Length: 254
Length: 71
Image (tube, rainbow over the protein chains, first blue to last red):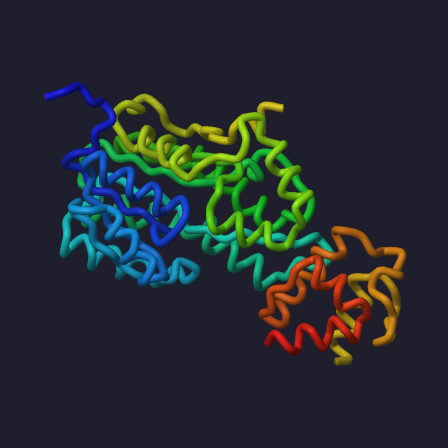
């Protein structure tokens, strides 16, 4: 057997936000690395498409609205009873929120916080229960953003939700170390996904060019982020916890 | 309509606006205000509009009618 320290055979991971973009790319990569997957999203059609892209891998799908915390636990408990305990999870579900301060809206900001941030905490809470965690070294990966690290105009609600994840990462990494669960966070720059298409639809070509120029290595691909996630889930990163890993083509190096 | 006028007045940083006012004629008009209008249209009317569509609408009433047409 060839040496492959990033292989994920025999491990099972939950992927939130798996119906599109980074979630889809991550699911496909992890399945190629041998992991069994439990895909979670509100978009069932998108989940089925992702499952098809995972080929012959063992992949099951569950649907829940992560903006509503009370939906999360019963859906995951039910899935784990059916398909087995988890070795970790990745919280990729998230929404952008472009709004200057003067148009910020409390309801929308709360929705963004619930999905981007609080769902990460709720998923962690469910994951550590003895009925869900496979009781072997575990790994949790959150996804923040360059805008959890550096500022940008018209982004206060989104930045709040992503910067908060950095605190969640560090706090939980300490709390869960005794359980042998690592907690890390990937902070991507802009990658070519549907989310960027939706956001950039509000702007013109000049803005798009500016965005591209902010990344010394250019805009990223979804696989660039998926590769970092796979590393953090694998035993290759077994001594890494509480870190915020920038995967941003040099955006925050400047 | 009255609610929309009040929302636009707040975003354009004036006490009140008239339906025939040109959107880009206000001192507060800039790219951030354009984004504010886009966010307001999404939050309040569940309508996605672009910066170019705001310019195309020209006036306050033109923008109101455009948003209504997309609902």
